[in-house]
Every structure is written in structure tokens, then in C-alpha cells.
Amino acid sequence: MSKINALLHKVYGTNPEDQSSLQPKEAIAYGIAGFGQNFICTIIGSYLTIFLTDALLFGADGVTVGSLAGSMAVAYLMLGTRIFDAFNDPIMGSIVDRTRTKWGKCRPYLKWMAIPIAIMTIACFLPAFKAKATSTFIIIAIIYVIWSVVYTVADVPYWGLSTCMTNDTVVRGNMLTITRLLCTLGAGIVTVFVPIITGAVTSKFRYTDADISRIMTEKSSEISNLVSKQGLSVEDAANSFIGTVIKGQEVANANTLKMTYFICALVLVVLAVPMFFYGFKHTRERFTANDNPPSLGHNLKLLFKNKELLLIVLSGILGGARMVYTYTGGLYFAKYVLQNEGMYSLITLLVVPGGLVASLLVPWMSKKFTKKWAYIAVHLFGGVVMAIMYFVGYDAKWKLIIAAIALVLLGIPQGVNNIITYAMIGDTVDYLEWKTGERGEGICFAMQTLINKIGMAVGAFIGVISFTAAGINSETGYISAQGANTLWNMLVLSGVISMFACAVPMFFYKITEKRQAEMVAEIEARKIKK
Image (cartoon, one colour):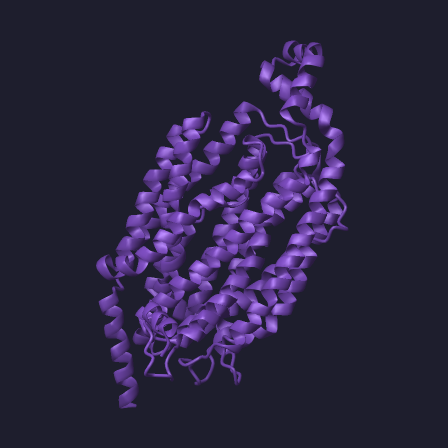
């Protein structure tokens, strides 16, 4: 056996002597599928909102959809679609548990859904959409709802597949740790490079500091009139006037953004689809029930018998806003407050070191303290860090340095959460089988995707609500000093509350590593007796 293979077996905790059990090549294939999946998930989750408000200008002053302001319509679309999609997950989980094919019940969906997901993702960013038009909003809303359903059909079975590949909680935990790391890397590539690209291609439509200084000097009398007539501060009057002066650039800027997002989505889809197929081809299901498939009603009853899983779900819902700064709101803050869209890439990069530390800490923390206490500890830590960040603020260079350090530290709870919840849900599958004799991988892992989608829904909703409350105009890029404070307070304070809240249900969670091993042993003993 080569040194590389020996290292991979050590990393995954797999047994090279038992070729019938999970092997590193298979675990890597599973991770590659997740890597590609996150290309698609992230371009939609992080940038469709921006596409709507900034490229299609539904965030511009005076734009309405029915009786709603354009930005509020976007906020409700993001929230409503994601919640609708989240509660479709149990239905999809039940469909997965009823699926019976020669490839298993989870794997086939990686093969079947790759192309439909690709088509719907590209459709969300078509550059032919007309800006500010209600008909455009309705069409994108329909496409987005269809995309969410199609994505769910692949996402639920993908995560359920991990419990079909192995029932060894250590091996499964290691595989999910590395897979989540790959997923984070895939999402990180998108969140880092897309704003750099969009910022670069639209930079020609932005006035430089020299241009602004010249305009302020030449138009000082007009600015003074705004101060006297509207009661604005000199700074806000100047910003408002400059926004009006440069308003003529918005059409070219928006059209450039539309085409740029479309090209980014197209490239990411082309890269992601082969990874779906690779994951399908090189994985294997070993623990799949072959008895009569359960109905949706039966699966829902199983769900409510799995009290440990319900605690994880409640925790996930309460934690929906803990990472709002990495979603739409963080991009708005970088673009309009820091006046540099590319700074969003730095915000997301600052979280990466903590995430890498988390990937190393999770196996050790799980073994030393159990997954439960590791989860609780890192979220309480994250709440304290965000509270410090909130009270320090951002309106000075030294304060931004503290915020940057805080973001590095916040990568730890974010990374631990991304890894450990999948392993904990895998343990609840074993718990359910021990308690009822039925595994229910589909319905159980549907809860993980439900948590993820509610988090994305809350993140996008708070981001756009903050955009609206801050009084941002996506046409002119104008934001007042008070608006900047509002944006900061809403983004950070919501994260503080969410970090602390999500730890509470886990105090009642009872599955430990020792207990999980005992349950698996009892399950195997029952099978032998049969």
C-alpha cells in the first residue's frame, strides 16, 4: 500500500483490509460531489438577491412590485421561497426512503438531477431580463421556485447517502468533516471570486475620490442649498448630490452586472455538473433497507419519534441568523459602506482560517468533550465574539481591525457547525433505527437541508431588510451615515442573538459517542438473531 493510501486510510479512519467497507476513494468522490454542489448553491444563495436589487434595479428608489417597494418584494421572495422549499424537504426525504433502484435509494439522484439543476441555475441569471419590470420579477420568482424544488431533489438524498455508505460513526464523522471542508472550499471560491469579478467590471462606472472632490468643489453652492432646504448634514447633502450627478451611469452598470452574473453562473454550472456524475459513479450504498417503503405519513410519525433530531432542527432554526454577515448583508455592507465590493471577498476569506482550525478541532473535540458539548461551547464563544464586535463598531480603522480579528474567530463556530451537525444527524439515524427498527435516512437528512435553507432564507431576508432600513439606493449607491449604522447594527446584532439562542436546545440532547456505539452494537445483535 502506498504512503498516500496509508495516509488517506488514517485520515478517514477506514480499514484497508476490509475492501467491502468504505474506502478513501469512495469518500473522496462523495466530497467532490459536495464541492461541485456548493458552486451552484452559493451562486444562487449569495448572489441572486444582489442580481435582483443591483443588476435588475429592484433596489432602486421608486421601483415597486405591486404594492411593495422593490427591495421588500425581493426580501419576501427570498424568505417565502426558501421556507416553502425547506418544508418540501420532508416530502423529498420520504420519496428517497421509498426509492428502490439497482443503484440504491440515494445515489441515483446525483445522476438524474445534475442537468435539471444546471438548466434552472442558468435560467435564474438570464441577461435578457428587463430591469425594474414587474413581469421580470414574476418570471424570476417562478424560475426560482422551480430551481428550489429541483435542487431539493438532489440535496436531500446527497446528505442521506452518507449514512448508507457506512454506519461507523467515527468513519462517517471523518468523511463528513472532510466533505464539509470541501463544500466550504467550493462555496468560498464562489464568494471570494464573484465579487472581485463584478467589482472589477463595474469599476469604470464608479467615480474616483478625485472626481468626487472636483464635483464637490465645483458644486459647493448647490450642496449648501441642500443643507439649508432639507436640513441635511454637509456630508449627507454632498453624498446625495453626488448620487444624483452619477445617476446616469446606472443603466450601463446594471447591464454589465447582468451579463457578468450570467457568465459566472454558466461557468460554475459547467464545472459542477461533472462532479455530480463523479460522485454518483464512485460511491456505494451498503446500509439501505429493502423492506416495504414507508409512506410520507409514516415517515412524519418517525420524525416526531426522533426527539434527538428535533432538538438539532430547533437549534438550527434558532441559529438561522448566526452567519448573516456571510450572506447578502455582508456584500451590501462591503459595497455601500466600505465602498469596495471586493471587500466582501476579504470578509469571507477572514472566516476561512477559523473554518480550517475547526476541521482540525472537530475530531479532537468530539472525542474529548462529545459532539454535543463541542457544539454548545463554540456557539457560546461565537456569541461573545459577535457581541464584542457589535459594541466596538466599525467607524474607525482600529475598529475594523478588531472586526477582522472577530471574523477570523467566528470561522470556528461556523466551521464546527457545518461539520458537526451532519455527523450528529447521522447518529440520530442510528438512534431512530435502535428505537423503532427503521432508519429513515431520507427523512432525517431532510431536516439538515431544511436547517440550511432556513438559514439561507433568514440570511437573505435580513440582508435585504437591512438594505431597505438603511435607505440604500442601488441606482446611485447612496447611503447616509445613519443608514450605515443601521445596516451594521441589524447584521451584527441578529448574529449575536442567534449564536446564543441556537445553543439552548442542545443542552437537552442526549446522544454521546459511547451511546451511539452501544446502539449500533444492539442493532447488529438484533439482525444476527433474526
